[in-house]
Image 1 (cartoon, helix red, strand yellow):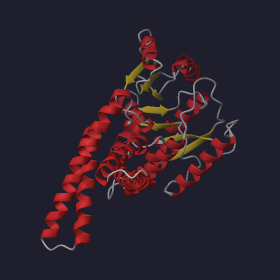
Image 2: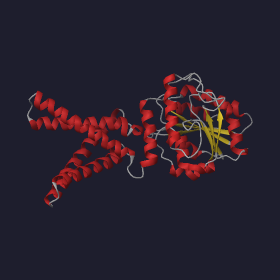
Image 3: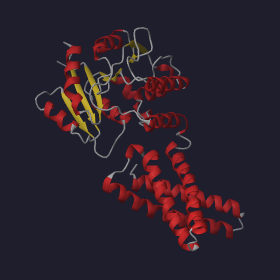
Image 4: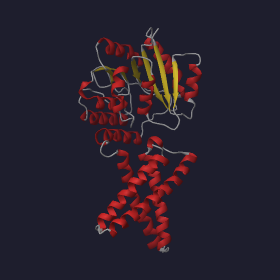
Length: 360
Protein backbone atom coordinates (compact mmCIF):
# COMPACT_ATOMS: atom_id res chain seq x y z
CA UNK A 1 0.00 0.00 0.00
CA UNK A 2 1.45 3.43 -0.95
CA UNK A 3 2.34 5.63 1.98
CA UNK A 4 -0.27 8.35 2.38
CA UNK A 5 1.41 10.51 5.00
CA UNK A 6 4.93 11.04 6.29
CA UNK A 7 5.42 12.50 9.75
CA UNK A 8 8.72 14.37 10.11
CA UNK A 9 10.04 14.72 13.65
CA UNK A 10 13.21 16.78 14.27
CA UNK A 11 15.05 15.61 17.38
CA UNK A 12 17.86 16.54 19.71
CA UNK A 13 18.21 14.59 22.95
CA UNK A 14 14.72 13.08 22.71
CA UNK A 15 15.53 9.39 23.22
CA UNK A 16 12.89 8.98 25.94
CA UNK A 17 10.15 10.28 23.64
CA UNK A 18 10.89 8.17 20.57
CA UNK A 19 8.86 5.07 21.41
CA UNK A 20 5.92 6.96 22.97
CA UNK A 21 5.48 9.27 19.98
CA UNK A 22 5.67 6.39 17.50
CA UNK A 23 2.95 4.56 19.41
CA UNK A 24 0.82 7.70 19.68
CA UNK A 25 1.03 8.46 15.96
CA UNK A 26 0.31 4.85 15.02
CA UNK A 27 -2.77 4.89 17.24
CA UNK A 28 -3.96 8.25 15.88
CA UNK A 29 -3.59 7.36 12.20
CA UNK A 30 -5.26 3.97 12.47
CA UNK A 31 -5.71 2.47 9.00
CA UNK A 32 -3.99 5.37 7.21
CA UNK A 33 -0.68 4.21 5.72
CA UNK A 34 2.21 6.17 7.18
CA UNK A 35 5.92 6.52 7.73
CA UNK A 36 7.86 8.50 10.33
CA UNK A 37 11.17 10.21 9.59
CA UNK A 38 13.21 11.27 12.60
CA UNK A 39 15.82 13.90 11.73
CA UNK A 40 18.38 13.89 14.51
CA UNK A 41 21.13 16.45 15.03
CA UNK A 42 23.64 13.92 16.41
CA UNK A 43 22.06 13.81 19.88
CA UNK A 44 24.52 12.92 22.66
CA UNK A 45 21.82 10.84 24.38
CA UNK A 46 21.74 8.33 21.51
CA UNK A 47 18.39 9.32 20.02
CA UNK A 48 19.45 8.30 16.51
CA UNK A 49 20.74 4.91 17.67
CA UNK A 50 17.45 4.24 19.43
CA UNK A 51 15.42 5.17 16.35
CA UNK A 52 17.60 2.98 14.15
CA UNK A 53 17.16 0.01 16.48
CA UNK A 54 13.38 0.38 16.16
CA UNK A 55 13.64 0.89 12.39
CA UNK A 56 15.36 -2.48 11.99
CA UNK A 57 12.09 -4.14 12.95
CA UNK A 58 9.70 -1.58 11.43
CA UNK A 59 10.43 -0.28 7.90
CA UNK A 60 7.92 2.54 8.41
CA UNK A 61 10.43 4.18 10.75
CA UNK A 62 13.36 6.05 9.22
CA UNK A 63 16.20 8.10 10.66
CA UNK A 64 18.34 10.85 9.18
CA UNK A 65 21.33 11.49 11.43
CA UNK A 66 22.97 14.83 10.74
CA UNK A 67 26.59 15.30 11.75
CA UNK A 68 28.05 18.80 11.90
CA UNK A 69 24.71 20.41 11.08
CA UNK A 70 22.10 21.80 13.44
CA UNK A 71 18.88 23.74 13.28
CA UNK A 72 15.22 22.84 13.51
CA UNK A 73 14.15 24.45 10.24
CA UNK A 74 16.87 22.82 8.18
CA UNK A 75 16.12 19.47 9.84
CA UNK A 76 12.45 19.77 8.88
CA UNK A 77 13.34 20.67 5.31
CA UNK A 78 15.64 17.65 4.97
CA UNK A 79 12.98 15.38 6.41
CA UNK A 80 10.23 16.69 4.14
CA UNK A 81 12.41 16.38 1.04
CA UNK A 82 13.33 12.81 2.01
CA UNK A 83 9.70 11.75 2.41
CA UNK A 84 8.04 9.30 0.04
CA UNK A 85 4.47 10.46 0.64
CA UNK A 86 2.35 13.07 -1.14
CA UNK A 87 1.47 14.61 2.24
CA UNK A 88 3.97 15.47 4.97
CA UNK A 89 3.28 16.43 8.57
CA UNK A 90 5.75 18.09 10.92
CA UNK A 91 5.52 17.75 14.68
CA UNK A 92 7.82 18.01 17.67
CA UNK A 93 9.19 15.01 19.54
CA UNK A 94 8.13 16.38 22.93
CA UNK A 95 4.51 15.21 22.42
CA UNK A 96 3.10 18.64 23.24
CA UNK A 97 1.20 18.62 19.94
CA UNK A 98 -2.00 16.61 19.70
CA UNK A 99 -1.32 13.87 17.16
CA UNK A 100 -4.98 12.88 17.51
CA UNK A 101 -6.00 15.60 15.04
CA UNK A 102 -3.67 14.32 12.29
CA UNK A 103 -6.52 12.48 10.47
CA UNK A 104 -8.61 15.68 10.48
CA UNK A 105 -5.65 17.67 9.21
CA UNK A 106 -5.02 15.15 6.44
CA UNK A 107 -8.69 15.16 5.47
CA UNK A 108 -8.72 18.97 5.29
CA UNK A 109 -5.61 18.91 3.13
CA UNK A 110 -6.90 16.32 0.65
CA UNK A 111 -10.65 16.86 0.49
CA UNK A 112 -10.80 20.63 0.97
CA UNK A 113 -8.12 21.41 -1.60
CA UNK A 114 -5.66 23.08 0.77
CA UNK A 115 -1.90 23.35 0.37
CA UNK A 116 -1.25 23.55 4.09
CA UNK A 117 -3.17 22.69 7.25
CA UNK A 118 -1.95 24.08 10.57
CA UNK A 119 -2.64 22.99 14.11
CA UNK A 120 -3.51 26.20 15.95
CA UNK A 121 -3.63 27.10 19.62
CA UNK A 122 -5.51 30.34 19.09
CA UNK A 123 -8.85 29.48 17.49
CA UNK A 124 -11.90 28.39 19.46
CA UNK A 125 -11.27 24.91 20.82
CA UNK A 126 -7.52 25.40 21.01
CA UNK A 127 -5.31 26.72 23.79
CA UNK A 128 -1.79 26.89 25.18
CA UNK A 129 -2.83 24.39 27.85
CA UNK A 130 -0.86 24.55 31.07
CA UNK A 131 2.24 26.08 29.50
CA UNK A 132 4.18 28.39 31.83
CA UNK A 133 3.08 32.02 31.66
CA UNK A 134 6.48 33.27 30.44
CA UNK A 135 6.42 30.77 27.57
CA UNK A 136 2.90 31.88 26.70
CA UNK A 137 3.96 35.54 26.61
CA UNK A 138 6.97 34.80 24.40
CA UNK A 139 4.81 32.76 22.04
CA UNK A 140 2.11 35.42 21.77
CA UNK A 141 4.61 38.22 21.12
CA UNK A 142 6.38 36.16 18.46
CA UNK A 143 3.02 35.26 16.90
CA UNK A 144 1.92 38.90 16.80
CA UNK A 145 5.20 39.96 15.23
CA UNK A 146 5.12 37.13 12.70
CA UNK A 147 1.62 38.05 11.54
CA UNK A 148 2.82 41.57 10.70
CA UNK A 149 4.94 40.12 7.89
CA UNK A 150 2.38 37.71 6.46
CA UNK A 151 0.10 38.13 3.47
CA UNK A 152 -2.01 35.19 4.64
CA UNK A 153 -4.53 35.49 7.46
CA UNK A 154 -3.54 32.84 9.99
CA UNK A 155 -3.89 32.82 13.77
CA UNK A 156 -0.83 30.73 14.68
CA UNK A 157 2.11 31.24 12.28
CA UNK A 158 4.46 30.13 15.06
CA UNK A 159 2.92 26.67 15.25
CA UNK A 160 5.33 23.78 14.90
CA UNK A 161 2.50 21.40 13.96
CA UNK A 162 1.30 21.31 10.37
CA UNK A 163 0.80 19.18 7.28
CA UNK A 164 1.72 20.24 3.75
CA UNK A 165 1.37 18.86 0.27
CA UNK A 166 4.76 17.55 -0.82
CA UNK A 167 4.17 18.86 -4.34
CA UNK A 168 3.56 22.36 -3.01
CA UNK A 169 6.56 22.23 -0.70
CA UNK A 170 8.82 21.25 -3.60
CA UNK A 171 7.69 24.39 -5.42
CA UNK A 172 8.70 26.80 -2.66
CA UNK A 173 11.55 25.00 -0.87
CA UNK A 174 14.28 26.93 -2.70
CA UNK A 175 12.87 30.17 -1.28
CA UNK A 176 13.19 29.01 2.31
CA UNK A 177 15.74 30.57 4.61
CA UNK A 178 16.54 27.41 6.68
CA UNK A 179 17.44 29.74 9.55
CA UNK A 180 15.75 29.78 12.92
CA UNK A 181 13.38 27.34 14.51
CA UNK A 182 10.02 28.22 12.94
CA UNK A 183 9.79 26.49 9.59
CA UNK A 184 6.06 27.23 9.25
CA UNK A 185 6.61 30.99 9.39
CA UNK A 186 9.31 30.61 6.74
CA UNK A 187 6.92 28.66 4.49
CA UNK A 188 4.15 31.23 4.91
CA UNK A 189 6.38 34.24 4.21
CA UNK A 190 7.94 32.50 1.20
CA UNK A 191 4.54 31.53 -0.21
CA UNK A 192 2.82 34.92 -0.10
CA UNK A 193 -0.90 35.06 -0.88
CA UNK A 194 -0.97 32.07 -3.20
CA UNK A 195 -1.01 29.43 -0.46
CA UNK A 196 -4.32 27.86 0.57
CA UNK A 197 -4.35 27.36 4.33
CA UNK A 198 -6.73 25.94 6.88
CA UNK A 199 -6.28 25.82 10.66
CA UNK A 200 -7.54 23.16 13.06
CA UNK A 201 -7.51 23.91 16.80
CA UNK A 202 -5.79 21.76 19.40
CA UNK A 203 -4.86 22.04 23.06
CA UNK A 204 -1.14 22.10 23.68
CA UNK A 205 0.09 19.56 26.22
CA UNK A 206 2.85 19.81 28.79
CA UNK A 207 6.16 18.10 28.14
CA UNK A 208 6.45 14.92 30.23
CA UNK A 209 9.96 13.76 29.31
CA UNK A 210 13.16 15.54 28.35
CA UNK A 211 13.98 19.24 28.45
CA UNK A 212 12.56 22.16 26.51
CA UNK A 213 14.80 23.55 23.75
CA UNK A 214 13.34 27.06 24.01
CA UNK A 215 15.86 29.56 25.34
CA UNK A 216 16.85 33.16 24.74
CA UNK A 217 19.04 32.22 21.80
CA UNK A 218 16.17 30.40 20.08
CA UNK A 219 14.21 33.65 20.26
CA UNK A 220 17.27 35.35 18.79
CA UNK A 221 17.15 32.89 15.88
CA UNK A 222 13.53 33.86 15.29
CA UNK A 223 14.52 37.48 14.72
CA UNK A 224 17.37 36.28 12.52
CA UNK A 225 14.80 34.50 10.35
CA UNK A 226 12.68 37.64 10.03
CA UNK A 227 15.75 39.69 9.11
CA UNK A 228 16.93 37.12 6.60
CA UNK A 229 13.57 36.94 4.83
CA UNK A 230 13.36 40.69 4.30
CA UNK A 231 16.94 41.95 4.17
CA UNK A 232 19.02 38.87 3.41
CA UNK A 233 19.29 39.58 -0.31
CA UNK A 234 20.89 42.95 0.42
CA UNK A 235 22.98 42.31 3.53
CA UNK A 236 23.12 38.82 5.07
CA UNK A 237 21.94 39.03 8.70
CA UNK A 238 24.88 36.86 9.71
CA UNK A 239 27.27 39.46 8.29
CA UNK A 240 25.44 42.20 10.18
CA UNK A 241 25.85 40.23 13.41
CA UNK A 242 29.51 39.65 12.62
CA UNK A 243 30.03 43.41 12.26
CA UNK A 244 28.10 44.10 15.47
CA UNK A 245 30.31 41.66 17.34
CA UNK A 246 33.32 43.40 15.82
CA UNK A 247 32.06 46.73 17.16
CA UNK A 248 31.77 45.18 20.62
CA UNK A 249 35.32 43.94 20.15
CA UNK A 250 36.54 47.50 19.67
CA UNK A 251 35.08 48.39 23.06
CA UNK A 252 36.67 45.31 24.64
CA UNK A 253 40.02 46.21 23.09
CA UNK A 254 39.98 49.80 24.32
CA UNK A 255 38.83 48.76 27.80
CA UNK A 256 41.60 46.18 28.09
CA UNK A 257 44.15 48.67 26.78
CA UNK A 258 43.08 51.23 29.38
CA UNK A 259 43.40 48.74 32.24
CA UNK A 260 46.75 47.34 31.10
CA UNK A 261 48.46 50.57 30.07
CA UNK A 262 46.91 53.25 32.26
CA UNK A 263 46.14 51.34 35.44
CA UNK A 264 48.71 48.53 35.48
CA UNK A 265 51.31 50.74 33.73
CA UNK A 266 52.39 48.02 31.30
CA UNK A 267 54.38 49.10 28.25
CA UNK A 268 52.09 50.27 25.43
CA UNK A 269 53.29 47.74 22.85
CA UNK A 270 52.67 44.79 25.17
CA UNK A 271 49.37 46.29 26.31
CA UNK A 272 48.24 46.77 22.71
CA UNK A 273 49.22 43.23 21.72
CA UNK A 274 47.50 41.71 24.75
CA UNK A 275 44.38 43.82 24.20
CA UNK A 276 44.25 42.67 20.59
CA UNK A 277 44.31 39.01 21.65
CA UNK A 278 41.66 39.64 24.31
CA UNK A 279 39.41 41.40 21.80
CA UNK A 280 39.85 38.68 19.18
CA UNK A 281 39.06 36.01 21.76
CA UNK A 282 35.97 37.93 22.84
CA UNK A 283 34.85 38.29 19.23
CA UNK A 284 35.31 34.58 18.61
CA UNK A 285 33.28 33.59 21.68
CA UNK A 286 30.44 36.01 20.85
CA UNK A 287 30.35 34.91 17.22
CA UNK A 288 30.28 31.29 18.32
CA UNK A 289 27.34 31.99 20.64
CA UNK A 290 25.28 34.32 18.45
CA UNK A 291 26.42 34.69 14.84
CA UNK A 292 27.11 31.01 14.22
CA UNK A 293 24.80 29.51 16.81
CA UNK A 294 23.61 26.84 14.38
CA UNK A 295 27.24 25.76 13.79
CA UNK A 296 28.51 26.31 17.31
CA UNK A 297 31.91 24.78 18.02
CA UNK A 298 32.51 22.63 21.10
CA UNK A 299 35.41 20.80 22.70
CA UNK A 300 38.51 20.42 20.55
CA UNK A 301 36.76 22.09 17.62
CA UNK A 302 36.33 25.22 19.75
CA UNK A 303 40.09 25.61 20.17
CA UNK A 304 40.76 24.70 16.55
CA UNK A 305 38.26 27.35 15.54
CA UNK A 306 39.82 29.90 17.88
CA UNK A 307 43.23 29.38 16.28
CA UNK A 308 41.69 29.64 12.82
CA UNK A 309 39.91 32.84 13.87
CA UNK A 310 43.18 34.34 15.16
CA UNK A 311 44.94 33.61 11.86
CA UNK A 312 42.10 34.83 9.64
CA UNK A 313 41.60 38.06 11.57
CA UNK A 314 45.34 38.75 11.69
CA UNK A 315 45.46 38.53 7.90
CA UNK A 316 42.34 40.70 7.75
CA UNK A 317 44.04 43.33 9.89
CA UNK A 318 47.06 43.30 7.57
CA UNK A 319 44.83 43.69 4.50
CA UNK A 320 43.04 46.55 6.24
CA UNK A 321 46.30 48.39 6.87
CA UNK A 322 47.84 47.77 3.44
CA UNK A 323 44.70 48.72 1.50
CA UNK A 324 44.09 51.85 3.57
CA UNK A 325 47.71 52.92 3.15
CA UNK A 326 47.51 52.35 -0.61
CA UNK A 327 44.39 54.53 -0.87
CA UNK A 328 45.91 57.21 1.33
CA UNK A 329 48.99 57.33 -0.90
CA UNK A 330 46.64 57.83 -3.87
CA UNK A 331 45.40 61.06 -2.27
CA UNK A 332 42.20 59.51 -0.93
CA UNK A 333 41.12 61.41 2.24
CA UNK A 334 42.39 59.68 5.38
CA UNK A 335 38.92 59.07 6.82
CA UNK A 336 37.63 57.42 3.65
CA UNK A 337 40.84 55.43 3.24
CA UNK A 338 40.57 54.17 6.80
CA UNK A 339 36.90 53.30 6.39
CA UNK A 340 37.44 51.37 3.15
CA UNK A 341 40.37 49.55 4.70
CA UNK A 342 38.14 48.49 7.58
CA UNK A 343 35.47 47.32 5.11
CA UNK A 344 37.98 45.17 3.23
CA UNK A 345 39.24 43.69 6.49
CA UNK A 346 35.72 42.98 7.74
CA UNK A 347 34.59 41.32 4.51
CA UNK A 348 37.74 39.19 4.51
CA UNK A 349 37.24 38.16 8.13
CA UNK A 350 33.61 37.25 7.54
CA UNK A 351 34.22 35.36 4.31
CA UNK A 352 37.20 33.37 5.57
CA UNK A 353 35.75 32.57 8.98
CA UNK A 354 32.43 31.52 7.44
CA UNK A 355 34.32 29.24 5.06
CA UNK A 356 37.01 27.84 7.33
CA UNK A 357 36.31 28.49 11.01
CA UNK A 358 32.59 27.70 10.99
CA UNK A 359 32.44 26.19 7.50
CA UNK A 360 29.18 27.82 6.41
